[in-house]
Length: 137
Image (cartoon, rainbow, N blue to C red; front, side, top):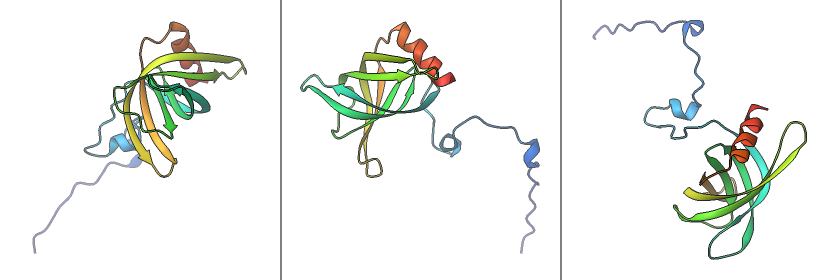
């Protein structure tokens, strides 16, 4: 039988800490998001070009876009209008309506609907500043 020699791993304290999400550390899984995001559990609306507004549950938010759960599967590249309110740590409320484009839609039995990732299109400076304040809080 061959003698297999392995180098010992460095002690845990000597390993560099990582801010990368755990799923992004899995070989073969690449993190595509370019902006920090934060949990954003609020109710809001989405309006499609072919139908009126419908209620959705938002999941997370970043300066690049939002994630939400919808009863409707919305195809990628569909342009929509989003309506939601951001509440900051000082209890101030900021309602927003913004145009967005669907990046992906995947059914989730756990979330009981379609988890949809959307990219903001031409967000206002006020929206971006408010999101940054929300993420920092």
